Image (tube, rainbow, N blue to C red; front, side):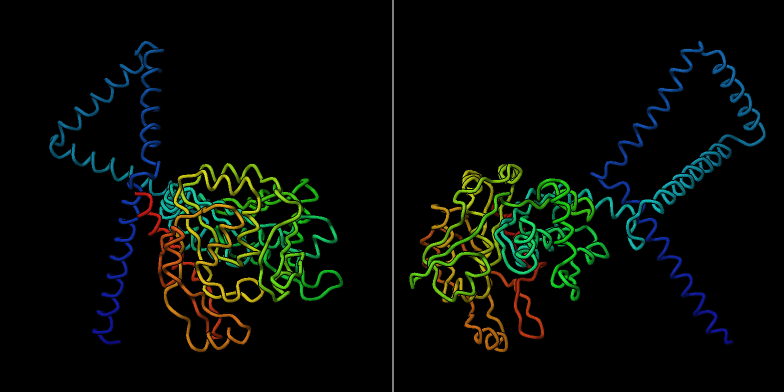
Length: 453
């Protein structure tokens, strides 16, 4: 083995040691960061110890304390007679500080090994992130479908104070079957939002989203839907079932159904047909001229109204206009609460039109549909994707008569809405487009920072 190789190995080890030392020092300084709520409790603990000793000294009339102090004083005098004070003092002080640092290091390490949720993360980083997220703004997001759950994945990295108000009008797929067979509210959209807000989207979340592919009666159902259905039967309603599931998944925020009423959507088409049922409306292939629900004016969940009143920021969409966004606003108390708040409110317009619902719709027509359903203007701004999808995506979507939503600036401005233009799209290899959760959340918080000033 050559001397050069040995030197290189030694240099590498020294560099690694320096990096580890630097990292540890950096982590220790983080414990002194403001807002971590650690230093104040340590100081209170030290103060408690000092006051305890003082109280004990008063109680026993100082006699044992006096002799203990005299003994220590005589001992220290003997030491300073042998070793000068200007040498013994700093040595003892340094030794005491080393013992203190060593003891605190081992204490923190022992605690970290027990409670650290992720071995790859330092405990101080987890605490700092926790404090930052729970100091974030109170956000209410209103909608349903995959668009809402996709948005929540991005928002949860900025705030843990999120309330997702979700439509319960779904009557297709697994949710529709459970609704028909058990008479429960459809859990599908709620399940997706719970999974999106889960603190650790790993095994439990995968289990919650698992869909059975075989089995009589099980095929097509997701485990989360069955779990929520069973909990609804046990707890008495969907609200309690969702709260229990939230604890299991350790979600950031809360998910609430817009109403606990058994709501069914209906739509009148331009050709005179009346279509009933959420899953049937988009399949009818007509132009919607009127829209509503049965029963009319369903009561809102009180917790949803409370969240809206306390919100710092309200976001609507993205998602199917008539079957995901508007159904929440057909609950009059929700629309009234949104209209009464002074919080910034923004609507996220879809990137592509949806056949059977918004075929041929521009941005302004999306806004008019929401205003018509509520009887008033509920949001201040509309977020529109800026860049057109690729030619491959356009060809793919045109086959199903879907096209990019056209931004008619003048009409949107006349409707009194501010336009927020940004590149927030993700396009996969198959030409399928959707909102990018990270980009979308970043743009939404940038706009919120400017709007609240």
